[in-house]
Length: 68
Image (cartoon, rainbow, N blue to C red):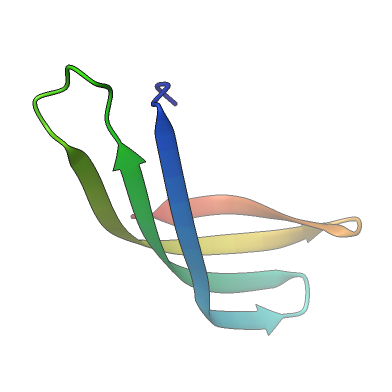
């Protein structure tokens, strides 16, 4: 990720579905980037949606496919 003077992120895991060792997670993300002093933009706000297919590996969950 490129460096920036400031970055704030809010994440909402809005939907979680689990079926055994597989699952689906839909998350909404709001990212707030405070730009560098000489940037042509003051600040940048991005709203994103992630749709992730996940699998259980041991005690962890891993993303195997992401749609943005």
